[in-house]
Length: 482
Image (cartoon, rainbow, N blue to C red; front, side):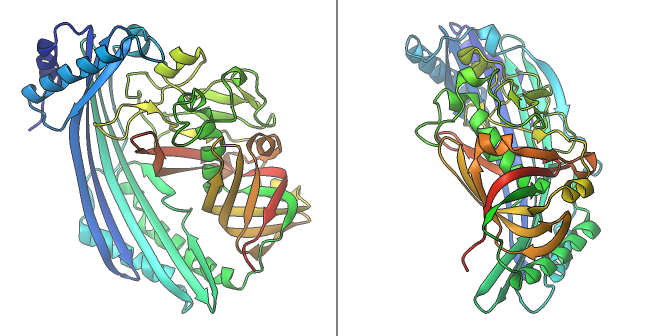
């Protein structure tokens, strides 16, 4: 049965007529997981969830209560509890909100464009996964192959007593393929664009079996190649990052430190704060003049595209960093009201039983004008790194150390030797100020991850990052254990 959210809102309003405002946010999700290991079925899983969050506003504060029972009586009870919370917070909050400024009465309908809506049957999906495992098994030194597909949808409905009426449907599909190779004590792992990087919005057309099997074959071959590759050198040189590693670089050293609620201290006890201060927004030189980072929830196919965030703030493209200068933060209407700084439409929640908080969405490096050929030709001593393997960053999102799966040395303007265990470290602002070349549109690729964690209680959510190939000068690189 499809519940009429407006009918439930009427029940909530009737239960607490003294509330100055009520909002209902329903979220339904369903997810399928198909996993094959070493060419055999490993597991199949299906998850579904559905419920409503009720928000009540009183004297500058919001109160929340959630229920998975979508009956009028249960929603009315949740409204009563939400109002009790809002009244208890009155006079004690960190900020007194003006309702019109943070809960616009948006009317919106938005859905992920899909070319193929009907899902493939499970036996067809596993047929592909078995083929992928066979392709990953590029030789006897491959000791394990894993391939999986995840597909799902999230449906959001929002109504409010001030006239909001919003419905959004987000559909996504991701594939992941990994080969582990061993020769004696040497073990190497190679994957298709890092852990779950190939996750995008769309329909089942994203499961391009022919292209993915070809990619699996390359992944297996490269895993074996890494077994005999020399260790990455340990020195200072020009670092070139492929888009599937730029995804992690943007996420950790730009996305998280620019979330305004983190800058305000909301995450300090759990995930830390930021090296950025409020007064830096509008004046801080984050990177070189080649650095242009945009918040863009309108890119078709990128994982965190949407029409509005979950408080009704309509999403539009905004530059976060322009010509290296930090011009706005990653905070929606509540954080903008608290900070007095410009932000974006990014207040989102992972479920019906969590309130929305500031989350990065599609955060992208804009393409430049340098071809990959010209970029490599201009480097005397460098290394190209692909596909994230490990990450570590301090709780100010400042000092970091990242590892990749696959490296290629650059010598006198040419790609030469494959190296294993490539790693690099740096300090966020210094690193970005050393951005020396930005690839053109031909090098631009979009990736995403569905498992970015933040908040207490924890919220795991999907984000997207698109980028061209980028080069950074004077970076400390190093190899793994000898």
